[in-house]
Image 1: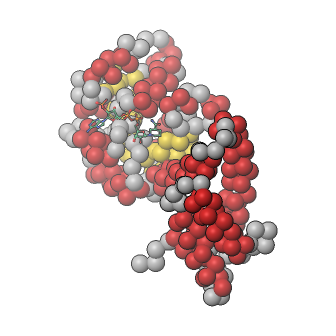
Image 2 (image 1 turned 135 degrees about the vertical axis):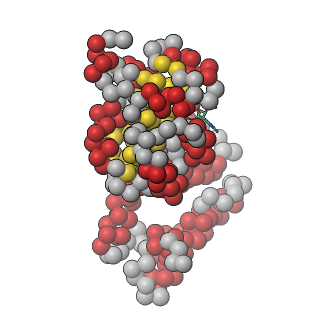
Length: 295
Ligand code: FVH
């Protein structure tokens, strides 16, 4: 161990899947004393060969450091791994992807066991970890005190963005951004399907698609946010009525190209409902609000 390692916060990491392994390597490279545990020991042995200490059990790994970071498959695996570990006095940071409800329950669960808790939502894929210019970061929520205390150590693998004391907010931000990503993936899949059986090179088509989606995303996101914040709905440039009038063209094109409209039809239906509501005088009703259940 180098002299530098003594000055860095010791870290325990539970979970050495693709993401956990990438995280582990950055803390090792930054000189943090690192204790690891993984359900399948071979993965921990591989990281031990790079300088970490491999614990025989999750409880043993938890014992080794105050700062305990968990990056497992899901909330059930967190429950299974930490079952029987003594969390009293520990600072538990859970980077496992969960629902906001699970994150809030896990925060209470940790506090009942004497630990401080911070939840995290990772906005990066493993190749972005340890590569600052890749722009990856983690949303954190829960104890602000804990976030500030460990901010430097947490910032070693990727950037950090704190989003509030509510332990569920990191997961909510994470899921919201990823849900938007899947909506974008759906549109991209539909677009490629439309050209699939034509003599159009998908590789030549790709930059056209990418640039168009990028050009539309920013203004659309900004406009929706302003509408929600102010209640003022200005669609004069591309009115909802004009867009709804265009939907038969998109559906007919899908039909003609032999493509299922299953990905785009639900959004067209939402636009139609939005237009009907605004014609009924419900001007403050946005497409976003139509999605929010009132019960
Ligand atoms: N990889 C990615 O692209 C995404 C990026 C955004 C964030 N996610 C989330 O990060 C969590 C971990 O993901 P991962 O990529 O490391 O996932 P895997 O490679 O599948 O590794 C899973 C680890 O969880 C362990 N595990 C699974 N079940 C249990 C259990 N019942 N008890 C204890 N450990 C368990 C598994 O152990 P093993 O299979 O090696 O024995 C791995 O360590 C995740 O929430 C993503 O959504 C990643």
